[in-house]
Length: 381
Image (cartoon, rainbow, N blue to C red):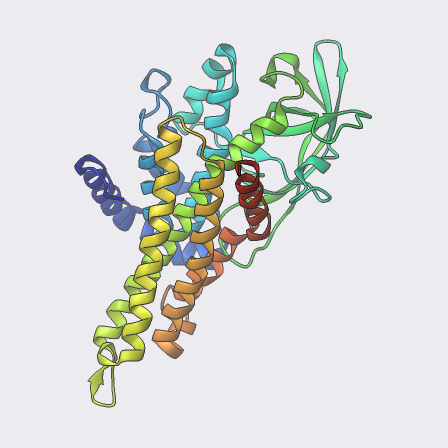
């Protein structure tokens, strides 16, 4: 899929920004496991924390394609910053704008678009991962408030986010899909942060366990109608999946470029290793896989921006992009040999960072189920 001149210009300008402003600290962020707060401020300063929010609410008013280009280029230089950015935009800010009422939008969207408040999404629980319908976090009513009790785990921006979308079931409800969503502020009494996770990759992104103990949520902070949470988070995940697909493409493209440069410069047996057919075949396969994945992701984004159904396409894009991402980075490390295994090159970090793309927002196994169900549902003889 060919990008328009406007999108190509946008990509080039953002890439220049990412390489000059974000890339220099990526290695340090990974090694120190420090949250990339300065990078978030830099993104906010250019309006990117509200990239798909209309200008009337202080966003940039751009499309899903613009967002994916940012995710690609951001992931290519710093995966930790990219994941932080994705959780804020795709999993919290945009859902508030899409599902919230006018009062909620006016209260939360402008400060989040400006970067004054960072967002997070509380869906996953210790006993409810792929089976999100198995949510144990519950709510009851007490006068003008809902009262939340429970825990959420593996929450990106969990300890640094000030606004969260949290899913919960009505207390004692026996219906697995009768889930509601709430806008929660981390400053409220009853909200606490538990364990901060130490991860294989994306070490600078904040991942935490959060608890709700008799947390009172004003009734006006119910997102949409009661019982709509399951439908909402399925839509949130559709959008999030193409973002993770773009993240994997960004990592793969960056790894490919490292391998290509190395292959042209490295000499063995008196020749550049790029002259050896074994290396050429690897490079050809890597480039082909990246281009195929990119087209799947861009097509899903096109459907989203066109207002057309894209659940199947989002699942396909994320599944394929995440799996070829792993394959491409692995082959890049093979081309570099021992150098690829060393921290002097970014490939070992990319290899660790990429693994999340095969797990977050739907494991590869769950995505295959989603795709198969869509195919069978729409099949007719």
